[in-house]
Image (cartoon, rainbow, N blue to C red; front, side, top):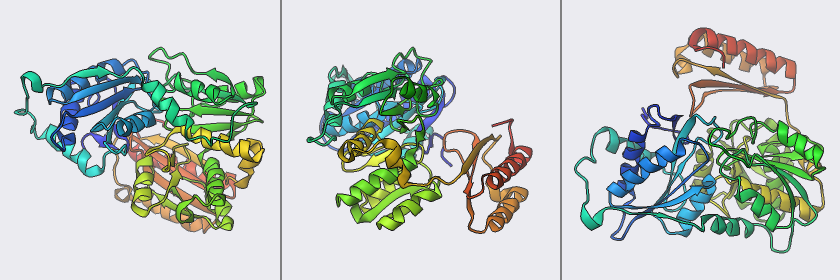
Length: 453
């Protein structure tokens, strides 16, 4: 059993185990140890989002890294995909992001990238845990000139902005487009407006005043209501919402309707396919993606391969099979020709490029996919007991799957980052799936619950 790492790094309430300064120091030491792979001065890039607790954890990580004789390159607030890019671009030995992504400000997390810009594989995360919990690092303490240094990289934002702009087709411009963007008071609050403005768009930005505690608070990709209002207020051609670390993106069309990650994948997969750039005519999605995605892409000759929930598993499948585009309904989109992880700003640029090239509004592009009704609810649990060990829940799940008989799809899974059970069902009858989800949620609360989720 993992003691630290979930599906997206280490995460928890800041200043509570495991997200303490003491643990961050140990994670820094262990990460520095495993990144040493050849005889040179080793360096680790460190970025963060805008949470108040980022200062505490950043200082602890730097202490741990430097104590192992490795230099720390401090970036400051930067989207997670920006750290992946800078790790590769600067030929660093690893990259670390201090962020809890879409979670509220009191949480925080630590994600680690390898020198190639990909998230650490499971075996290296397990090695970090072993180094920490088996106390293997105690005697490894360089002294004198061998202690690491810390440097601040002042031009990091500019480097990432140039990289992002270079992913937008040279022959196109955003001139004439009015864009409303919501930066969630998070890591993209400076970079995103600059990118779209420099490409010619008129930008109306909200969520660009972080104070350490307002990240994701009623804004960003999980709360698109303010963005929908901004699109209507400014008569924008599109709205673009990021989460706290800007590795995901959700859109609002010119009519004020939300366009989710599945619809964006349908748009972009079709465009890549038409240009002959979709490798093996395959899109990689997760089990959470809507049934409508396959139905939209199959007539175009595009296959959908599904993975476990988590962008890391999408990326693993893409790398293993040689695919170059994939993502999640939540808005994590991986354009492997450009970056190694989900990148909200980069993804937005690819959608805007399709809008400009085709001359079609986002609402029209989104009609490529019919979204089947889907209900998702989260139930807080005391502990993540295997459902097979809760017969009354397992048996009812089996019965429901038999009752829908191809008219719908049921998925139940534990969250990788929270003590919650996620119950999702989709199908052609909204009332039917809603009734089933409510029934299962009550069963789970009765037998596993820790209060309302």
